[in-house]
Picture 1 (cartoon, helix red, strand yellow):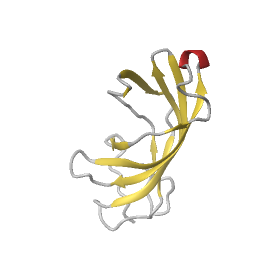
Picture 2 (spheres, one colour):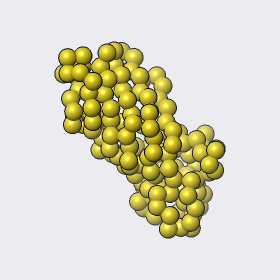
Picture 3 (cartoon, helix red, strand yellow):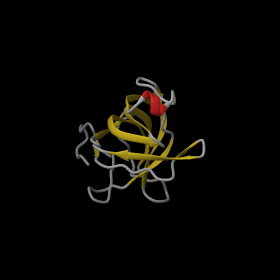
Picture 4 (spheres, rainbow, N blue to C red):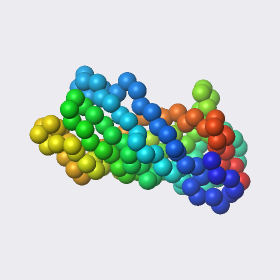
Length: 141
C-alpha cells in the first residue's frame, strides 16, 4: 500500500489466488507466477473510509491457465470498482470491464482451437483483497 494523496498507483498487488474454476464442466487451474499488478484510483480519492472508487488494475501478467493439456497465459488490465469496505469480509475489487488477451499458448494441437494468441480473455466477478500484511487501503486524502 502506498500513502499520500497524490500517490499513483495507490497499491501494488503482489499475489493472487483462484479456486474452483471450471470451463464446460472441466476443472481449470489458474496460477499466478509473477504478480506485480498496480491498483489505480481513476475517480479520485474519497471522503470516507467506506466509499467506492472507480479504478483499474494494470500490468497484469503471469497468469497461467491450464485446461487439461492446454496451457496459456493472460496479460492486460481490468477496470472496476474498488470497495473500501464491502460490509462483509473487508475490501474488494469488482471487475466491470476487461482488456485482457491471450499472450502465449503452449500448443495449438493441445489447445485444439480453444484459444489462440491475441484472443480476448475475460475475468468477471468481485475479488476479495487481503491487505492485512500491508495495511487496509484507504483512499481518503
